[in-house]
Length: 600
Image 1 (cartoon, helix red, strand yellow):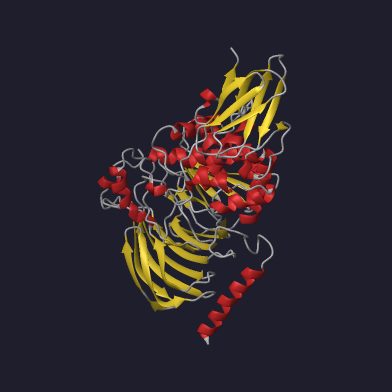
Image 2 (cartoon, one colour):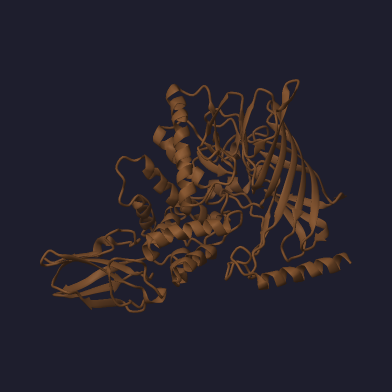
């Protein structure tokens, strides 16, 4: 009977996918393998006892896992991220063999002593009360289930584990360079994500994360003098017994849980006009200039959040915390860890970036390991625009340096497609330029292709349809297509899936006749500015034939340019003095030297 019920559940899933009518019910032509969107769900309950003297902690974890997929699961996997901080780990070896290692890592892991390494050791694991078989393989726990998990079934996993916080090297750890005691990111056994592409049990080698949406209930026992901040809402007052206190946090609808603690943290709060509480945790022994920066940061962080609320969508949680810790800047659920001994411009800039990640990854929870540009690139785009708030002179193209970074990569000979898994870039430099620069240009240049107003609508629609979900690249494409009714797969195919480049040039000008040429392989519509010999000017727009539409423009629209045609000629109204392709420089042309023609 049990298996019959689950078979009927699978049929119901298929039927509901077939009849769903809206993007919320079914993502039409989505990047998923069926015409129906589903995602797994997990509820964590954890009791953690942290010993601040030896940096070890013991944990009990109850995990209720709901299989919302149409598939039968025979195995599950957990991430044990702290195991990366051991000599001989994949993170260690990769850092010592890549040509341009992250200087924060270098060979430091290889030199860790037993009392400095990180580890998570699973002592017992049960499925619905029955002990099950598991094996630790580096940073992944491979679990053979006692009984397969059927579609629609909930199962409960009970785990006991011991762990040690590593010396702070990358993101997480103890006693970072600024003296913060505990930066606790990716610190617990974390169930791997299973989605339409299957399991994502990637080893922790250097990049970022992908997690299951759910609710967290965490009780943390720690030295009573430590100030703790991070993900979730504190439930009542801490319970103090002897020299220890127990804090109880709950975090609804998140896919991670992070915290930091130090006995010397100052905790400030700032209430925004809409009721959101901003928390700031920073060391009281900072130099006065840094203490002043942290005070000044508070109102500006509120202004940043107001910008993102308007430009992308409303922040849905009751609070957000900016915490001194980590090794630079890294985003987490309802919080960020950033180093605090910075100039004010640097402190504000890193806060703008990490706060923006709340939208582009923690609410639009793309797979950072596979599609790093969807979070880093889109975050770079929106945070760069946000920083314009604080500039006396606004830039005509705030993303000019970002474009320059991508163009340098495209001309470097080391570029790899944006489809490259984030751990598989040959050079860290190429990863950074691709994820941050090219990813940002992909979004900014989409505004050039479809028009800025349409881009703004696309961003808001993308957020509204995919918040609290796991969007994939095609979901961005299809959102833009629904907004515009254009065909845009060519744009994402060339710019994200290949290293094809954009290069258009002015071939020749003879009297009124202008001839342009396509040199690069990637097609684009063309904005053209013409100055006539009598001093008057005119803007032209040359649609790309395969786009099947034209962006809103005040320019004179002329005939389409079919991509396979290497040249394009047309007659202007009068004798021509000069021509410029893309005067806005919002098209990522890798050689602007041939974009301008001026009559001698």
